[in-house]
Image (cartoon, rainbow over all chains, first blue to last red; front, side, top):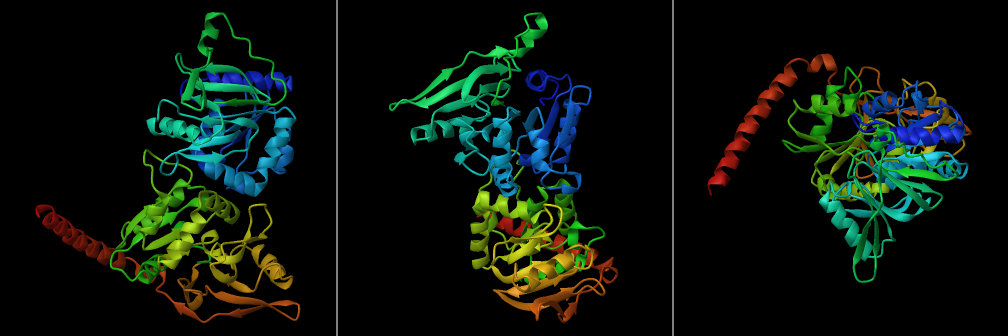
Length: 243
Length: 260
């Protein structure tokens, strides 16, 4: 849902089409981390229009526009897209509604899970949040047994915070710059893709002496238009795309 | 407050003034926590349009969306004179606060004498239990428990809440407590009820308890606040003048300090 850039949306829709074996996959947007912000929901419906998919959203704040059976709805989607905002608020609200358990169930059934910013952090065992005050560790859903840091490079305090947390015992993980997305199957990273040339993701870990940052090979999705279309990996079970 | 107030047009200006009066300061710092509504922009906008013209310093804290500011939650909350919790989902409010540790900060604020207030979900949250409609039908939920008893809101305006509250009281799934109409409010000092106030004709508050298997409502004695028509238009004008005079005085004070 980047402005003027549909490359990552196209990528996750490609995974959803394969998963659902349909041209119009069922896609549900979870705007919880933004407090179900109206403008964000509008943006989702613009980006994931009915020509491309069968879009829906699930609001936890304004129940009057909620879908009936939340669990049933989520388990029957091909793609669940989690929007950005505060990951702490996101996890708090999800747990109160039991969505943490439903999302794990959806993942185990092979529904493609994706999200950006807070919607990326939430899938990992540990994440770096910088919402109020200095960067803090937060425990996510733990589908992926790694740590995660987003907006890497764009927010110096967050990068420094991630490095500090790694030295203090945070588990190894992945840092993603804006525009870069990590694609996991199961717990395994299968690919890094990017909507902007030069956007990178990095493998981060504490070696015992220093923090190692290893840049990961990244496929720029824009090259697809030039003819050499990168074949999206088969969306097997347990796909998470974290941007 | 059982409902109404700044967040529901046309508003209850008397309740806004009452809240500021309870702070017992000439120019209190008042902070909106719009968490229960997911930091909804219209609630935030209505808060500022109600309080901007009153003698106070309004601000708000978002737990969902943040501009470029990184604020220290503890610092911002504990420097206020009034913390005003907006309406929305009681269940989400409590869950998000707990996730941020705001529940502990609010207890600290309360113990330091900061005025805590709120509307709807922002009222029920202070009691031992309230009713949430987050799952559709109203359902009891455990709240912060600073105040003893339970609380139900919109008693006169949302028909499905009353039977649900009565049922919860009868079955003792919530302790006895207070049902409050839109436009009415309860003032507590510490944990003691001081008075029940009403900014609308007929708006009431009730003590509800189980007696011989039935939910019994006992109306509370209401103190009438000036109604909307009685406040407008002179009050906003005089307050605007007061505010200007105070701003002028403050800026002179700043200038003096600056020259030292």
